[in-house]
Image (cartoon, rainbow, N blue to C red):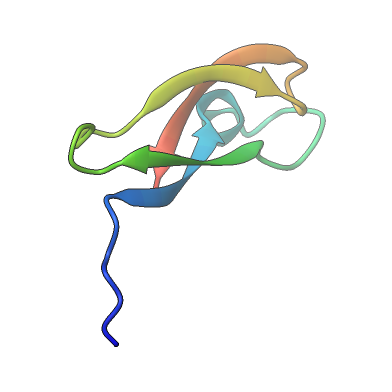
Length: 64
């Protein structure tokens, strides 16, 4: 039996502050995983989430 490919895909969200700031105290980048519907949301997601390395709420953008 052939399996159907669904509309929902799993994406990774990465902190923009951690990625751009190289002279921080802690080394590392905050990442979250979530799912989105590729038919309804074709653009990349940008969600404000808590970053454990920055200890603040920052914008997390979708990476591959």
